[in-house]
Amino acid sequence: MKDLFTFFFLFLLSISVYPQKRELIYLWPDKVPGELKAKQPPSIDTSNNDNIVRFSEVTNPAIEIYLADPAIKNGSAVIVCPGGGYSILAYDLEGSEIAAWLNKLGFTAFVLQYRVPDKKEGALLDVQRAMRIVRNNSQKWKIDPEKIGVMGFSAGGSLSARASTLFNKRTYPPVDKSDSLSCRPSFTMLIYPAYLDQGANLTLTPELQLSKEVPPVFIFQTADDPYGNSALVMAGALRNAKLSVELHLLPVGGHGYGLRPGKVAAETWPLLAEKWLRSVLKDK
Image 1 (tube, rainbow, N blue to C red):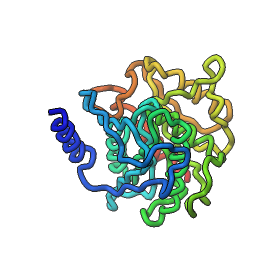
Image 2 (cartoon, one colour):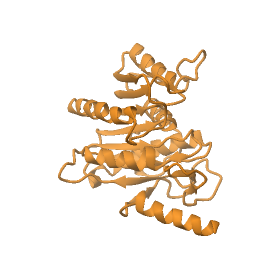
Image 3 (cartoon, helix red, strand yellow):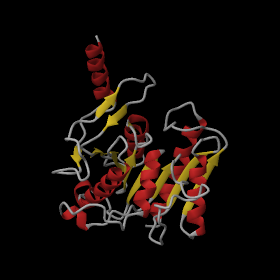
């Protein structure tokens, strides 16, 4: 009976998360650097009944490609980093659903399947490698290599912030010609980000090294989010460094809402983010 339920769940996943066959590019053609386990398809957590698809283990990191309609395509792209506490990936809530929204705005989107669980350092390698692969294939996908951003939710926001501040850190030996390119994002969106205030006395996480090269950053958060201070600290640090940052803070909304309807925060941030994106890209 359990096997039948698992089969039925995977079937529903295939028609909901993957309504059409999309290209999946694996980031590491040979051994995954720092990974001890063999490459396997993502493991799916079926223990919750809350309408969220969770990848509980990723050992073969990849990007799933969401191409924009050529009629509205704007030549820009976003790598989307789902959240999940670096333990799981909330793959539809903060991944595939976000990519579909970006497509409607004319963006080509790439949902990042970075390593979990508890592989924070490996996740940084994955997002850096993903950025380089997208940039190297920009002509193929008809996107501007100078207009490739990163976007993350919760722990994915942490990963996006790390990608946006640690792009000069060489974290793995070059694999191919993609690795000769920059992994610096052109712009960054952090939606209810976590773990950015892990410095002394809840200050900026020491790992996040701010420089003049840090791209423009959009941050959305709610005051009642248990990770709310993370956004405030990041925004304050960017402001003090005289870097471009836009922060929006709603009084209520909690955490982990993605784009799901019925929640004010989920219905508010996309409008603000869209306006910010158009402004930022107009200047590039």
